[in-house]
Length: 403
Image (tube, rainbow, N blue to C red; front, side, top):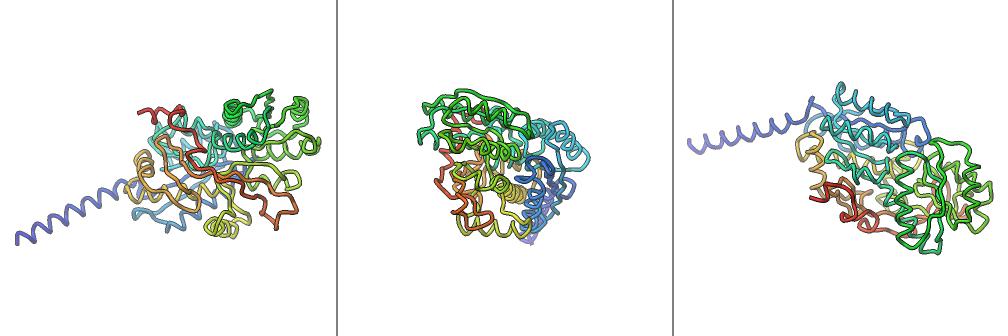
């Protein structure tokens, strides 16, 4: 009888523990908000296909986590920090959103990060690149999953400098992302013995780059480096070719050029460009399987930020399942304690500053004659181990790494 009573007491305690764990899922659901550029210059690299990537991740996870339904909402921030912050506030305060993902724009990400800390929620950044997000602005509420400006600049600048390109001129988009990318690249250039001979800045979403390109051409720098991306990068590269820059001694550098950008630019203009990326869809059977599944849903190959977004959401949901909670910092802490290994994240771990440390890839845009067809645009030049790609803990400005 005593044994029976003890077993009943133990069973009751376990049941109460299980109930308590389930009770940590607020509002009886886990709600994901996809905040991205759905209509502007970054919409091809992120946009509607990013929303589909999250939808795929939820479906592949089974639609439920810790016994509760997974719900998704999405919105277009129009590349405006105030609009992004207003959407995030509404989601947090009125719509019970637990985590906001994607972003596409660093200024929007910084604005939402501050609000996220206030509301004790979480953000998963896959497509905002400023290295300050996991540097001086790092937070227990956030992760930067795919890349940052340091990793992009470090990989591409190092490759060109090793090939003899010593003097650099920057064409920089004038907001947080462009400035961070330019600064990280310039530091790498100077650290490895190169020089920065000048810079010109352009507004976000520019159409005419002729004056900027002429100034860059007149600098006689070995490299004209475009610290921009999306539609700005596509216009930069096309117009640089029209001005004949690719026929002379000057070389072009594109730090953030994704598969969607090459698709927009065309191999005729993009051929030969060296690019650092967090994902190469034709790497192996795992990446090709995801790319095929993604193409069936969207009609195109995934960019690195779309592939990384899927990966970050799956790993977030695993952490919710394991912790039994949707409390922002608690889930992020759980993610940092878990093994991370999937088609996207190779040799990976989530560092205390919120940066996913994983292999990066130096690829080169193919010549038109090398391509086997649509979306066959890049060839792998080098795998860059994560420890070499991202800033070291000693160099980082993140206070979380100084404990």
